[in-house]
Structure formats: C-alpha cells, structure tokens
Image (cartoon, rainbow, N blue to C red; front, side):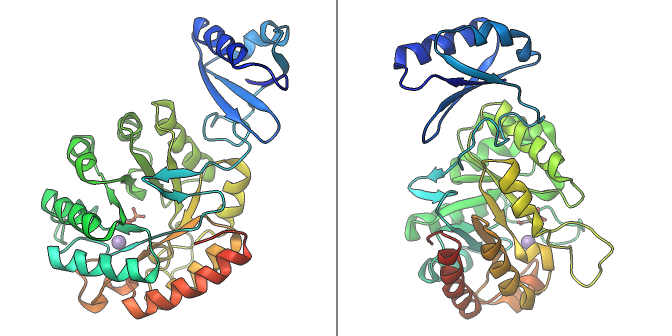
Length: 337
Ligand code: PEP
Ligand code: MN
C-alpha cells in the first residue's frame, strides 16, 4: 500500500506516520519525489489498514501496490534511484562503465587492466575471484588472493571494485575487499544468498538468470531489498532462446521493460550476452541508445590468452574506442559518462 502525503506537511508528521506503520507490524519505505512524498507500507495484508490511513490527517491518498515486487517496483519509488558507491554514481543521469577481465589471473594482470580501463573512462573495475565455470576442470579463480589484487588495483586507480560472491560462506571475505557484490546469473534465484547479501551494506550487482522472466528477475531484487539492501543494480546479460549464433540472446527490450517496472538502475552486459568480441561494441551502443544506465564489458590486455571467456573479451584499443562512442550515445540519451 502506498500513502501519498499531503503537501508541505512537517517532518514530525512524517515520523508519526512511520511510527504508526511500525506499530502495526509493517515496514515503511519513504520516497521524496519532485512534488510528493510517498510512504510505502510493506507487509502482507497491509491493504487491510487502508481506511485507517485514509482518515489520517497527514495522508492525501492511499493506493494499493499491485505488483509483487513492492520495494523494487516503480510504484513505490517513481523517480529513478541513483546509487552512490564511494562517489561513483549509477542510475539517473549517470552512465556507468564496469570493465575488466572475466577473471583475476595475477596481480600484474589486474593492475595493468585497471590502469588501462581507468584511462579509457571506466569508473568500475570488474574481475572474478570466485568463478562459476560451466566445467569443473576450467580455471576456477584465485579466491581470496584475487580479491587482494582487486583491492590493490582499486587503491592504485581509484576504480570501485565489483566481484562475484557465489555462496553465503564467501560473503564475509568478499565484503572485506569489494565495493559491490555481484550475484551471477546462475545464482539469481539462490534466495538464501540474496537475503544474506541484502544484509550487508554493500551495493549488489544482480545479473538476470539466463532463463528468468523479468518478473522473476525483479523478485530476486526484491529478496535483496526485503532483507535491507537498498542499492541493487540490475544487469541483463543475455537469455536462452532458439538462436544459436550468439552465446545467449541479448534482450535489449529488457531495458525498456525494466525502466517501466522499476526505479533501480539497469546495466547491459554485451560480453556474456554475445560470447563474441566483435559483437560487444555494437551491442554496448544499442544498450546506451535504449536508455540503459551502463554497461559491463570484459576487457583484457591480452584477450587471446585470457584464462576465461577469451572469445568475448575485447582489447584495450577496442575498449577505448567503444567508450568514446558510448560517451556520445549516452549524451544523446540524456546521460553523462
Ligand atoms: C561474470 O560476469 O563474470 C559472469 C560469470 O557472468 P554471468 O553470471 O552473467 O554468466
Ligand atoms: Mn566472463
């Protein structure tokens, strides 16, 4: 249920309503728009209190939240959420670039790539230390050693670090080093993991499951938010279709649908979506043109010899050119990079 408050009501009245919501066993979520202040009343059967709130002196109107994703949905928060990670922003008018190798391979590899992507214009460094590989015989990542190298690369470049956490037991370690916790496509519906990352105060970079509907994707975000997480970044990274020419099929319309359904920032990953380095720049451009809030791109100083996802990884000159074009497209779409 959403309460739209009367205009110009004093702060003590807002606090009183929040206390009232808590008293009845519900959670409140306040949103300050350009004109109106709204308070979401979250919890099962909140709507039963409708009349009670309708008659409150500070409430202008009451509406039911019709979507199952109450905290992630745009009804509760009509303006776009801007996520601030230590001064680097994602969402609203900010176009964010997350770049780096699929996996951290060595100290020197990640530091060199970090410096190069920073020079090209990225503000976020990606790199897996715990890798969810399709084959158990493939390189599984450097684990905590890789996290240490990522943190060192952050200290040198100032880039913010995003890296995947695959299971609950890794959270404590990953939060020590990362700025943003990535939940991989294969874990999008690992509800216990989602709940636990929501309890940390880190931003969460949530990838869409390869067979997940948009509604399931948003319910995954809802899990993170229901346990306290407020900074969720959604990432479309390709879905399974009958098309076999690319690794997955980039669902570009997910940007439009998500922009309508949610206030959370939406990022596109053209690398995992296509599986092919030649397709990465054009798909990144499509993302910017469609109004995405950023892209996540796999970049390596020596892509041919990358230990994972080599075929979809672009080199530094290609990345630099891609960012130049993205800057223009993001500007046309009303964002700055
Ligand atoms: C990744 O970004 O490193 C990754 C494994 O992606 P996904 O979970 O989308 O497959
Ligand atoms: Mn990868």
